[in-house]
Image 1 (tube, one colour):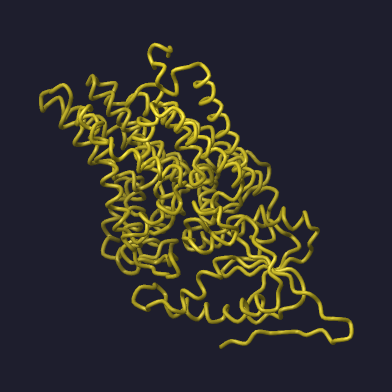
Image 2: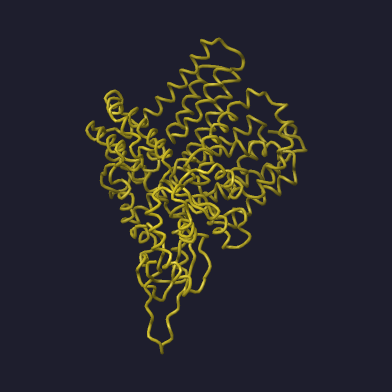
Length: 594
């Protein structure tokens, strides 16, 4: 890349500009290192780690069929190298409880978690950044590629999500690789490039079931080639790509089932079909039982993939996850959830840049070959339609696969903004640095104060479950607080003890005694929202309402008697209840159920 190629009018037109952009790439890598060390293990992360470990250690893909094996196998590799076993083999009926039990070895779990995140950084995140560069380069030249990487990777909403032992970053990588491979095939259709499309599509399918949303882009691209080919050639290359993708996924399942036992495999299928696994499927899968068992006789891989796909679809149809937004909670998907989440969680600087880009999108489109933009447009459209209609309203990480494509026009426009571009990138960088390590709990109105996350919070969006325990532990040690009492519904005490050995979980009915209290902000959100929710929109309404009614007096008692000490990482509300004067007998309050 030379000055003459980029031109002095672009931000990449000088050596100094290119060095500055590369420095920002170094910064986003440093932020990833901080994220690896500073974030606690989410519930899904623990489940993925256990599932991958069991598959690699025992050769049985018995649990977590709701996700394909790629990420699980990768993140479990460091745990496999440990002298001690992370967990004993378990079946689908006890998988979720077993994911809690791995916290009984906190040192081992900490090493396994950090190791798994480093593996993801090397095998998924770094390739994803490189793919974003190639994506921008192929669409608008090297400068656009250099801009797209920090525009994506420096966003505070993206930083914490790339290495948390979940599947969304790997899916994003697979999607971007597939689009790049489709572009290469469009330019010069060759057998090798069709193979590359298949391998890239396989990465997406092997990461998450929503990878199937790439299928329209893959199929239509091959059927509308550039330059025109015969129908026989088009169908041949499409068939080869699909075969390679299926072969890749089959290889992953074969690794996870290297010591496959047919009896165990068939029992696993029955457990999921009958609702005894980790998915809530009601009776929706029971009509499929005989067909799935017959399929297992032909191909265990295809049977397991189909069970997972049908199970996820059934659970989505039922709508089982209570999702909080704007003071309300519902298990039914809300069409506005992801648009609203995008507006609240995307940095304001990026939103302004996107708004500034809209007027010139028309001019951009006129200068581009519509067939070239077809693959990303088809995928983004299919993905967003599925997201808007889904009952899985589970957070910003579900938007990761479309973000590089949404930001691509910004990168193209920013190439010529010069000073405006440096302001945009500088604000993104400064914001992510200032929010370290509170990225996940922050909204783009974080500057309004530390209480703000509870005002514009989205459960599992900017209050990801089980986040910030690492920061709570560091805060507690820094103040030499012993016996911290924690209010966190449905948390197993072994999880808390893994991070804060001296802490204590407080449950409804326990006495409220003097000391330090950390109240999960999900209590502040969910308890009042559940009590005002409609039974028609909340799965398990009776049980959740009973839970909320039991927690309400405990929370109110702590808030009434305690002195507000602010928040830790935007996730835990801290209170201090002082002991009574020596002349008074110490009160002991036991909240009563309403």
